[in-house]
Length: 332
Image (cartoon, rainbow, N blue to C red; front, top):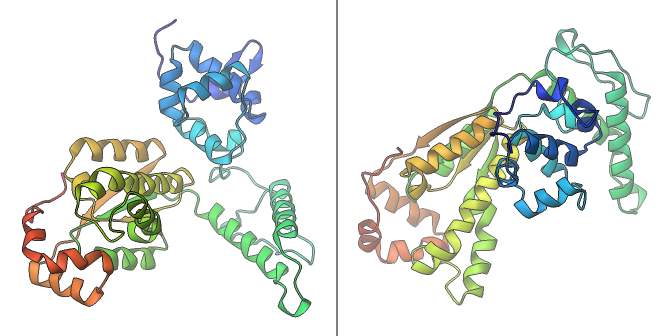
C-alpha cells in the first residue's frame, strides 16, 4: 500500500475513484467509495476508524458494501474526521457568504427575513419547512383541539432560528471547560457564562447523575459514593466519557459549549488536554480552560448550603477529603 497521505480538502472537489467523482459520491452519501478512496491513499482501516470514531470492523464492512451508514451523527463524524466540507454530505449549514436567493412561505409558515441582504436559498428553505412539517405531523399525538400545539408558531420559530443560525454561521465555535474543586462555584460561573453568551451548557452532575447512581447501585455500592475506588475506577471514567462525547457532538454541529465538572485528573494531565484540544480543533473549535478557585472555608460553607447527598461523605470526613486532594492543583 502507498504511504499514508495527509487529507487534502481539495480531493473532495477534484478527485475520483473508479470513474466516480468524489463530489458525487459525497452527494450520494456513498461512504463505501469515500473509505476506499482514502484507503488507496495509504490510510489503514484502523486509521480511518480512529479518525471517524467508527469501529475498525464496521469500517471494513462499510468499505466492502456489507454495511451502510444510516445515522446522521456518524455522517458528521466522517465529515469532521476526514476534513470533508459538511454540506457536501448534507450535514452542515451552507457556508457564510455563499450566494443565496430569496424565499417566502405560504400563510401556514413563517416568512424568513435575513438581515444585511443575506436571503435564504428557496429550495433549501422549502425542503426545511417541508421536513419540519412532516416531522411535526408524525410526532404530534392526537389531542383535543383546545390543548393542541400551535404548529404555525412552532414552524415559525424553527425557521427564525434557522435564519439566525445562517446569519451567524461564520462565528467561531468555542468550548470552555470550567473546572474546580467541589464547592468552588464552578457551576454558578458556568451558568453565568452560558446565560450571557447563549452557549450550550453541559453540567456533569445533571448529565450523568442518574446513570452514576444506577451504576453504583448495580455494582453493590452507595449511589452517593464519589470517593471510593469503585467509583474512581468503574464509574468515573464513563461519566467523563459521556461528558466529552456530548461536548464533541455539540462541537461537530458548531454549537459553542460551556462544560463544567471538577476535571481534577483531566486538567492536570497534559496529554488529556492536548487530545481534547486537538479533537475540538479538528472540528474548528477553540478551547479555553477556566479554573474556579475558592478558599477552604468557602468551599465547606457552600457544600453545607448546597446539602447534596453526594457531598455527605465530604462533609462528614472533611479533613480526610482535604487530604485526598491537591489544593495547589492548577490546569496544565
